[in-house]
Amino acid sequence: MRHRPLKIGIMLPESEREMAGETGGWKDQLAMTQKTEELGFDSVWFCDHLLMKVPGNEPQGAWEAWSMLAALAACTERIELGPFVSCTAYRNPALTAKIAETVDEISNGRLILGIGSGWAEPEYKAFGFPFDHRASRFEEALTIITSLIRTGHVDFEGEYYSAIDCDLRPRGPRPEGMPIMVGTFSGERMMKLTAQHADHWNIWAAVSGNRAETTKPLMEKMDAICESVGRDPKTLERSAAVLVDLENPYGRPGQNVPSLTGTPQEIADECKRYAEIGVSHLQFYPDPCTVEGIEKLAPVLEILDQA
Amino acid sequence: MAASVTTSAPLGRWPASERPMGIGIMLPLLDGGAFGGQPRFKDILEMAQTVEACGFDGIWMPDHFIFRHEANNRTPQGIWEAFTTIAAVAAQVPRISIGVLVTCLGWRNPGIVAKMAENIDEISDGRFILGVGAGWHQPEYEMFQLPWDHRFGRFKDSISIINPLLRTGQADYEGEFFSATEALNLPGGPRRAEGGPPILVGTNGPKTMRLAAQFADAWNSDWHHDPSTVLPRLIELDKACKDVGRDPQTMVRTSGSNVALPGYLGRRANPIEGTNEQIAEQIAAFREIGLRHWVAGLDPCNSAKIEEFSKVIEILDRS
Image 1 (cartoon, each protein chain N blue to C red):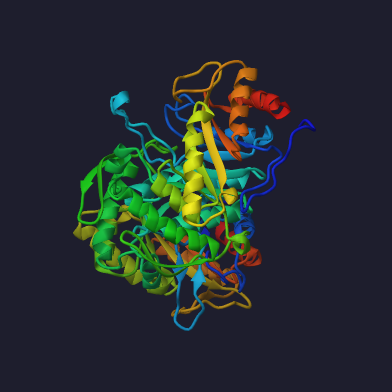
Image 2 (image 1 turned 90 degrees about the horizontal axis):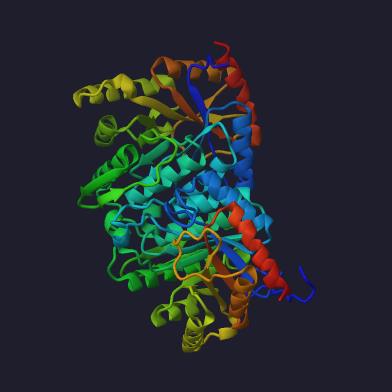
C-alpha cells in the first residue's frame, strides 16, 4: 500500500433522505465512518448545512456538522475528518477556530478545517443570517480564523467581524494548527482569497464536472491567480469533490452535472488523471451513499494502491 | 444502594434517578481550574467514564471561550469548546445524562444551538440536557467580540426560538436580536415526539426566571454553600411560575455546591468541606429543600477525586 497517487475520502449523507432515500442517524453515520476507516480510505467529510430547500422538493434538514464530526473523531483512530465546508456565516469566526481546535484535540490531529462563504440562501433566511456581502464577510472571517489557528492570537477590527486581543487557548496537538481548506466555486475573488491565505483549495463537484479533464482549466486558473498574488502554486494543496454513481443510484435533488460512473478500474483511472493534474485528495460522494455503497468503492483503492 | 432510599420518577422530560435528588459532576475544562493544569480531551473522557462508572446521575460541562480575570493578572486561561467536547464524550460514554451547564445564548445563532442540542441528543440516544443562561464573564465578550449589551433581550429572543425548534421542530419568531422564518429543526432526534431534550435555565434574576417558567423544564441556581441562599430563590421561582400560569410542581429545581476534597487547590470558591460524613450531611440539606438534582463542583477534580467523592455519596444514599 501507499503507492496511492492521491488520497480518497468519503462524504457522508448529512441531509435527510440522502442515505439511499433514508435519513442516516448517528448509528448509520458512525457505521459508515468506521467502514470508511476499516477499508483504508483516507478521510470522511460532513457538509455544514442547516436546512436545504431545492425547488420542487420537500425541505431537507441536515445534522449539525461540528457536533457530528466531534463524535466521529472520538470513535475513529486513523482517518482525517473535515467539515465540507464549515460556513463562516453561521458562527462567530473566533468560535469557529475554537471549535476546530477542540475537534483537532479530540481527533489527536486529524482535522482538515474546511471553510467557505456559504451559498444556500433559503437556510440563511430561515435562521436569520445575512446573505449580503458574503465574500467580504468571508474575507474578514478568514483573517480571524487563519490568525487564531496559526498563531493562537488575533487582534482585528472589521466591518462585519472583530476579535480584539483574542487568544485561542488551549492549543490542540498541532502547535501551528490544522490545515485550512477553502472551498470555492469558480469565482475569482474567493479563489484569490484562497491563494493568499489557505493551505488547501477544494473544488465542488458541480463546478469541476466530476472529471479531471473539466477540472484542469480550473487548476490552471488557480495557478495563474497564485502567481498573481506571489504564491508558488505548488504550495497550495488541491482537492475535488466527485459525485460517484454506483448501481441503482437514488438520485440527488438539483444535480446539474453528470456523475462519475463505471467499473472500479475506470473510476481508478479517472482518479489517476486527477492526480496527474495536481489534485492530491478526492472526496467521493457515492450514490447510493450507504455502507454498501462505500464497500463497492473499496476495489478502487486496491487498484490505486497497486502503483 | 440501600433499600431506604427513595427513587425519583421522571418529571416531564427530566430523567428518572435512583436517588430522590440526583447527583451530577461538573467536569473542569478550564486551564488552571479544579483539574490543576490544562485537562486534555483524554483526561476529560477519563473523568466522564469515571463519573458514569461510579453511578452518578449526570455529567456537566461549562460553556466558556476563555477566562481572563483581573485577580489573575489578566492571564488568559484556555478552555475547550463545550458542544464539540460534549458530543465526543456522549459518543464514548453510553448510559449517563450529559449536559451543558450552561451555554450562553448570546454567543451562537439560536438555530445552531437547537440543532446542536438535537444532534447531541441523537448521538447520546436521548441523554442530553440543554442548560442555557445569559453569560457573565465580560473579558470573553471583549476578546471574541460577543455582544455584552441587551443580554436579557438576546436571551429572550434566543430561547423563544430554541424552545419551539426543540419542542415542535419549527420556529417562526421575529425578535430584535434573533429571528427565525419558517425554520425547521430536521432531522429530529430520538425524543422529537416528546419535545426533544430538556431545557434548563440557569438564573437568579426574576425576569429570566419568568422566561424559565415559560420555556424550561428545569431551573438551576448555580453554586451555594448551604441551602439558605437557595430558599429565597425557590420562592421567587414559584412566583415566576404562577405569574405565567404554570404549576410550580412541574419545574425541576437544581443547584450545586463547590466541594473541597483533600488537596484543595482553592480554584472553586466557598466550598463545602469536612469529613466525608460532614460533607454528606451538608449535601443532604439540599435534598431536604426539595431539589431534584444537585451538581458537585469538586476541587480538586480528576478521576481519582471523583472516585473518592463517590464514597461521600454512598454515605448520602444511606442517610
